[in-house]
Length: 116
Image (cartoon, rainbow, N blue to C red):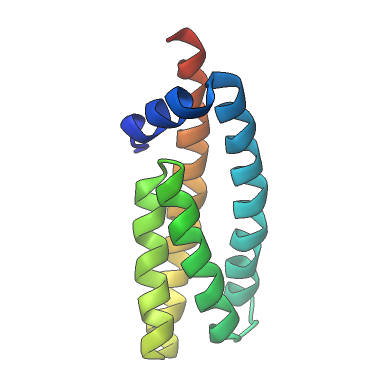
């Protein structure tokens, strides 16, 4: 579930139109990083690269109000740091599903900013 306070603050800080443009950039950037998670799940076993992308997704999601996605990314980052391949794979699957879903929900919620 998106953090509406973060979205409202963003709109207040930069204006609604700019906030929506920034959210579009966030989505494009996040999609590239989510693709790394998908690649990992399909057999690319570079946990170091996955950790870097999880760290970036954690910050991106939390900055733009997709806090459930940010938490899933944090958990994945920690799993990568601990190095248990089975745990990393499980956390990657959860992160892939959660982050994608939360970003979509955040973008949908952001459309309500135009009504405010």
